[in-house]
Length: 566
Image (cartoon, rainbow, N blue to C red; front, top):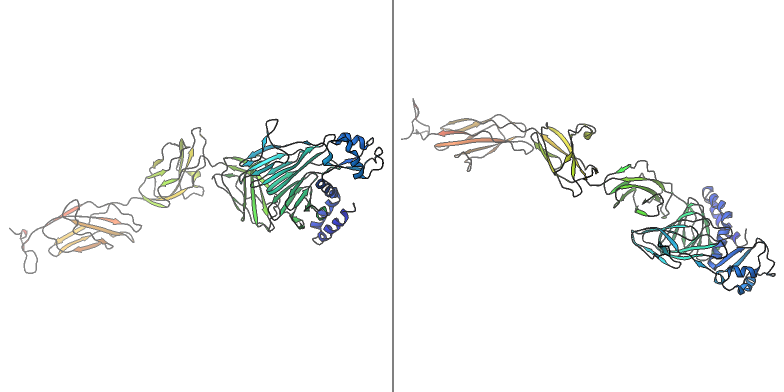
């Protein structure tokens, strides 16, 4: 243990023990293995390369091997306090300032990019690259993956800003220098192992630095803090430039870095359960309903273009376990979901697959309206047209089956128009739905089912029974169903253009005042309790004679009938 590292290890491990073995043990186990990472990260910030001395090394020879001006080798002697330039201790590290060394810049190669990405250029090989010192900016929908000089793969996500600070080889050695500054946003890193004695990849942020020797982790940065989440290996997180304020964060732990220090490592939340999610989604807006999870305050889902997740097709966060994804084309995609704790530290990934087949989208149903009540033995079904559809798939079924469309009464995939008359149907409740098919036979999902009820047409109303005498007109008819009413019309013309009586009656009969002499026409129809209006009965007529009346206004009768006026 180095003289400078020991106080830090005690300062970190003592408070960790108070958290119990679940937290303290992983961090303590990583401390010894990663102490060199902290030392190397300090050297990296000072701009030095550490050469492990071998047999036959001399300062003059190393000057010719590494330095821009080999004659500057005495500076190495003074910096390393070497007494004998030609007799160097084998295995000891020799510090060489980068400002004296020959450096070969190596741009980062762009593996994949999507959406709004600014800052790349075309390299010598024709591919997109990011030169050392260059800045990369992504829009909200931007996503870009880089391979750095040391083989590290960095995936920069949306709304992020990153600068490639170190990206070069050191000629004369197998060493490389690789590091970035993440000003804001999110990045996922899979760092390649560093060679023994050499610094590994590091990310600098406004609050500090994260140094690694080979690991996989996530970093998110805003103006107040840096959050690191370690998925494999161990990450050293240091506030500002002081390695003594660093902390080691082990696999399955995360930590929050601010300008004043590094918080205690926090266990990453367990992966959410994906067991209840559907295997196939048939609507353009994908909905994922996750089970509640203890300690979770938010959830994130990411959909990748492929299993590497180099490029994200969707990256959605929600404060509830109800996640919605829009804008995906049809296809099968890798998906990963994680929970986020109250501190904003994201947990371990649950990985699965998302299959979307939502196109061609089903048309909208126009008629009949939802829950409509219709009369007769046929129904006119109508829907909107689709520009993608060459024909339509129509299904009609009764609702009295557990799976109605498995026993469809009508199942046609060859309907070319946007309406269809289904005939010969018995009274009952029905559901129907429509899907679209492209010209090549590619079928989209069926649309949402819609229900209606079909009732039998009522029989035509029986004409009323009539009795006409000098006391008036008495009409009667058969009693209808509960809640039913009767509309009666009496008119002088057969077209009933101007009825002289048109009452709406709940009873089974009516008595009207005596009409004047002449011919009259009568009809009626029934109005059922649900508002359905039945057909008119057959039209009847009767005649009222102009008779001679006595003092009681009754017709004077003779053996031949009422005595008519001349």
